[in-house]
Length: 357
Ligand SMILES: Cc1cc2nc3c(=O)[nH]c(=O)nc-3n(C[C@H](O)[C@H](O)[C@H](O)COP(=O)(O)O)c2cc1C
Image (cartoon, rainbow, N blue to C red; front, side):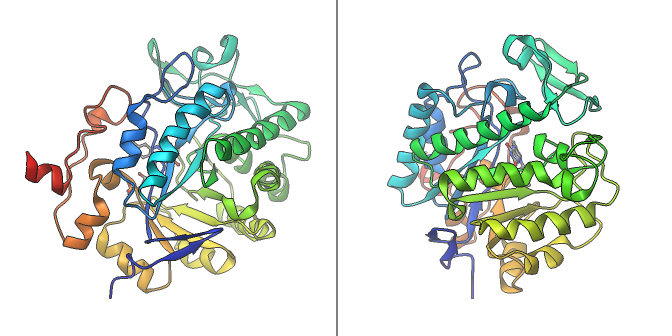
């Protein structure tokens, strides 16, 4: 018996199914003001068969921006454009959370207000390059945040959460994965601070917990989730004892009565799902390389409350319907993942449009 198509409680909401669309940056916002293009509403509307959509990463402040053509949630114009997205998704009976993403050191002065340095817990240059308006450029040595600047960043997350709700989102997800600012604080390799935000595991987890505290205070724990990817080691993240780090973090999350914990695994050496799910008191979302069969078996085995699909949902707008019918999926076109127009964005066929064509 399929569990994918049974309802599930996630925080304040009962989702109509256990298929969640993963947060995916698509870089379809105006470069100058971070306002999503009109087509963004169409894109999410097409994928609203999901029980829950998690939006692409959205920066809470201009300083949090790390990629060209990514959207923000700060100005009235941004809120208004997102309102069109949430209206479209709600009119199809689905739910949508906004992923709040502050890239920290994984940015570039050319993407920062006034060409300033990106910020981080410590002034350690990440390895690698980033795509800017003038092509590929090396990451730079970031500015180490002062305590008062950290408090401001936490306020920016609070403000972003409030504005997301104003824009009609059902909740907010803290992007705590993929080597962005929260994980830069959490991991020992990128955090060499000697104050209360660095050193011990408890101190390195403090930034995430303070940010969540502000988000929860603003919108309620039952409308807040967090995404983590233990041992993904992306964007130069290294931690001396990741297992101890994640045990401590997840144990402390329970104080917030969060809607969900979203864990995406990419070849981690241990079975984090088996170890983390029992420790967490909200809904547990599993992602990373799933297909229909592995999602069903994770649900059947009690390893997940809901299952998260990325590239498959990107390429197959009617993914839930295809699963119901056992139909084949569209192939994702990687060349159109980031930026550009409607090609590879809103023009993937559904079973219905394919019939008409
Ligand atoms: C085009 C693209 C953009 C992505 N952008 C984000 C993002 O903004 N935030 C995030 O947390 N993960 C992002 N991811 C990762 C996905 O959320 C997901 O964890 C990953 O794709 C694994 O799931 P899958 O194997 O089902 O695709 C992105 C993935 C893709 C393919």
